[in-house]
Image (tube, rainbow, N blue to C red; front, side, top):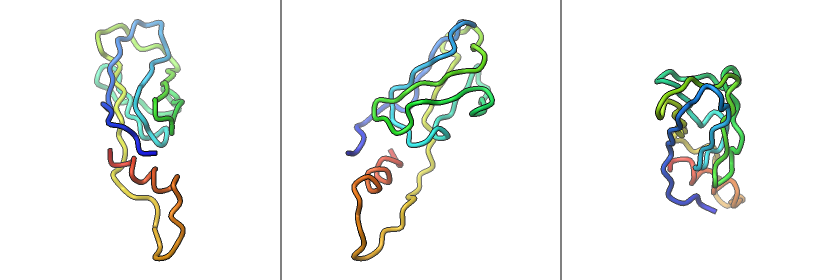
Length: 107
């Protein structure tokens, strides 16, 4: 099922205590999410982990260390490569799941 129109960025305010922040848009892989704190890009598995990849309704980012206090200083943004990952063959199988992922990628 194709993903509906979504705003692929959300900002949260850090408070030096909270480590889990939600996002409400679809990504296909953990690496499809860019996470910044105070304008600095953070590194997946070093600074944070992602849950919810592949879910239409999104998921969450869990930081190793709670981001410092600030207004809208934690930004979660979908950053997906605009590419098709499958090679479709003439008269070959056209599987719904593969086609959906390819169609969702450029959104």
